[in-house]
Image (cartoon, rainbow, N blue to C red; front, top):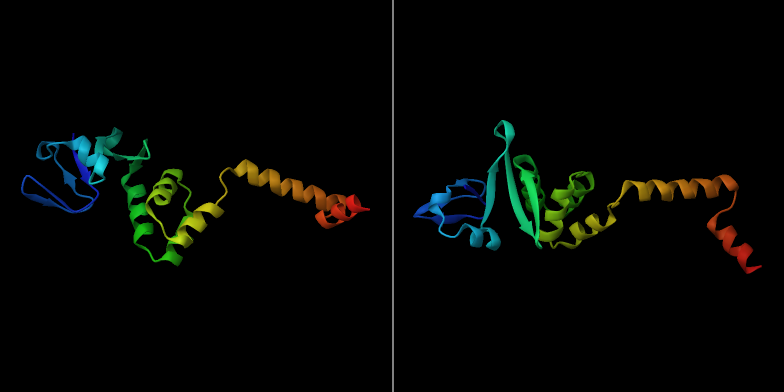
Length: 147
């Protein structure tokens, strides 16, 4: 099994940069290197596409090359640009890795502000719309309860 370098590393005297393929024959203990975050397992998928599997907090997350590139783009961006990119990012696996890897306050806030389930957002918006249609606002309801 081949690996993808997640950090600059050296195996069997050969240097590898981030994103380069590391042959499995060059790695003595691949499981340990994956656990340390130095390497990610590489699997060949259908039609020559490459999926990369990463383990975070005991859960295995699979990435395409484009998704992994999106993670690194966000991690390397300044805090304002990263927060803006997170707001537009739709892929959950990218968000999970950013949440685990990026400790910047603005990024954590951007992740927290994202809706977790579209149905919750729709239900909340629908409830507010129904309240407005009835002519009662939250303030009017509170006053009616106090009287």
